[in-house]
Amino acid sequence: MKSKAEVPLFPILSVNFIGTLGFGIILPFLIYLVTSYGGNALIYGILGATYSAFQLLGAPLLGKWSDIFGRRKILLLSQLGTLISWLIFFWAMHMPADGLTQINSAILGSFTLTMPLIVLFMARALDGLTGGNVSVANAYLADITPESERSKNFGKLAISSNLGYVIGPALAGLLGATAWGEKLPVLAAILISFIASAIIFFRLPEYSPRTIIDIPGKTNVRKIVGQEQKECFKLECKEEISFSFAMKMKDIRLLLIINFLVFLGFNFFYIAFPVYAVDALKWDIALTGTFFSFLSIFMVLIQGPVLSFMSKKFSDNFLTMSGSVVLASSFLFFLSHSTWVIYIGALFLAIGNGIMWPSVLALISKTSPQKFQGAIQGYSSSLGSAASIIGLLCGGLIYNQLGAYIFVLAAVIIITIFIIMILFRNNLQ
Image (cartoon, rainbow, N blue to C red; front, side, top):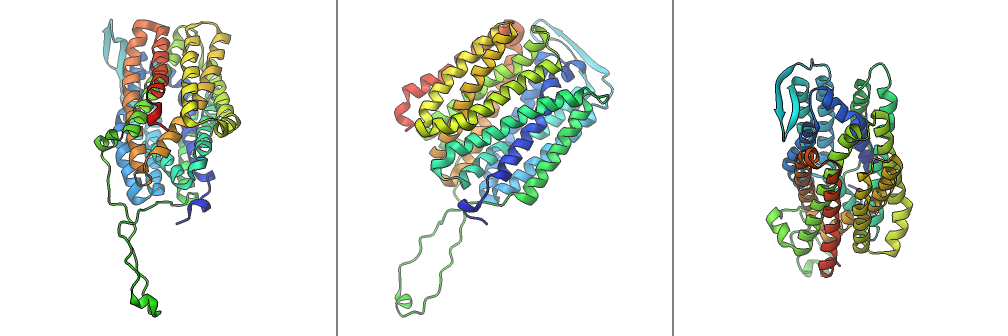
């Protein structure tokens, strides 16, 4: 097992990049795929919520297992789950889209339930159940990074994620234009998941810190006369932390609430915008992919040199507060039907998210006790999943009723983070 100074960042950053690249490839045409199989905005939201619901179950367990058995083993388990889920996803695309039942409702809208949709739900459920890779990767990075370097390294982790969303949509546009259509991008996602599994197995070193639970004995006479026998102490982490105990820690509780609000606001945006792009803006797959690539490119730029510079000048608290204000304001730009106004909003979104999100992750990692990093990161991921479920399920219904004004609701949720940081700034030093 390597020491903290000896563990390289490249393998964990590569795994993170490849993981988001796989999903980034299908992101632009997922809404089109769902609608072609009979679904609507609500079904699209439920499909996303399925992943989050099962991640809510799996992430805390995987986080605890990573504390006990080591980060690498659990990362490999999680990535293999993703690989199998993409194989199931590909299987669904070869099924006939015969209607099983049809729903017509003023609230739920109109949609047809088909077998390919059901199998897509199965694939997302499996991926969610083994989807603790983000929280385990966060814990792994916290393990191997000195506290003074965490903001910068979490920024690098965010960059690796966003690079996947830059390249993924671009690949989707290129691969989707071939005779294979949507099948070729999914095959690429399968290959990418296989590569990620290989990197974890062959390139990622194990790092699993343990706490000494017995206090070494006092010096005795044998040591004085030179007849010392070396004591051996078993290194293990027997303590566990429950969710209720974590929520009783005031600083942890505030950060977990902030994390919940971040995911809730973002998922209102992410469920609404693809549908908004299809229905109101009349964008095709290429335009949607270009937008997400543009957004991710600027996120990488912000989370790279910009965040690296700002993290040296400002505290994580200040970056979280300022980023939340910029992010909240960005959502208001999406009320427009003008393409250039929407792209200005994307720029503000990239700035706000690029400053705020790595700072929130850094605050959680700095505040969490070292021996509970995996568990708290798992609870953080679970709360994020709960927020995703609420945002994705309710977002589809709210969009059906409010249309683009759902972006105003997302702005209100994000600005609440700024208010919390102001009111409780003394607890988050």
